[in-house]
Image (cartoon, rainbow, N blue to C red; front, side, top):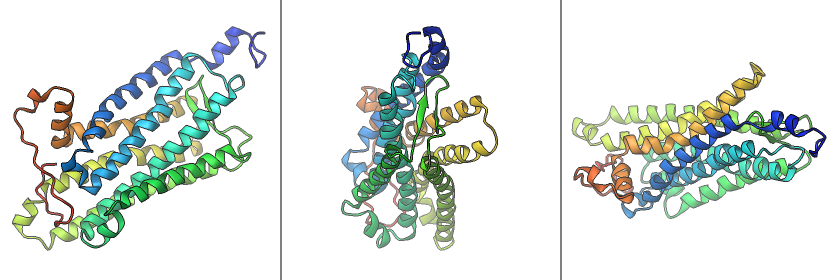
Length: 319
């Protein structure tokens, strides 16, 4: 009997040690972060930074990297050590309450902001887009996102909210002592899961309406903008899927393997952004290759300047 929870070493390891799943989390988290970090760096180049969509995606990318730390990288360390809830309550509280809730919920907020950005840019690029996102207002949205995430931190730091990471099964759990925390998280997951597809349905309708009033030459000039819309959809869609899965799963099953699968989906939802940028965004791909010293692979491609958002949404920018 040499552990704080009164169990012997082998029993403690059997309950809290999960090296194989921890290794999977570590590989996924580190790999996705390695792909995401250079993409976020090149978004700060002047020719991209003048576009508010890239500023929003930059913030989303930073939150992706932070969330990968708390749903993949750090949990894998906890699973290797291992850290049990009873023996290391402070470490579990820091991961589960302070870090996880802040980054995940702030990310959900900014994913919805990205939809709003795309919709108002297509519907009213000079009026509403300017009012909501121009002149540094993107950072007001970022501050609001952190405040939203901070609200969840306050809830789970209070006596009424409890969430824990179980290193033995590799998922976050709500113990019986939780009073309102799971309800707020369910609200966030449900709202995110439904608002994202609703937003992109609205975006599709806006684009369709505009196409009905455009000439053939104007329609041909919107290829770059359509690429950017597709990238925004592919970045946010996995978040919607993960959120909806977490909403419906408790009503369908209590199998641990299902929740482990959901956790992997959650990790992938934050890792896909970098892959989307490198496969669909040739400007970012070229800049990243130059950043890491592989400029020869660009094959002489010229990175065109992304035009300011003061022009109509028919920019032929090489996105």
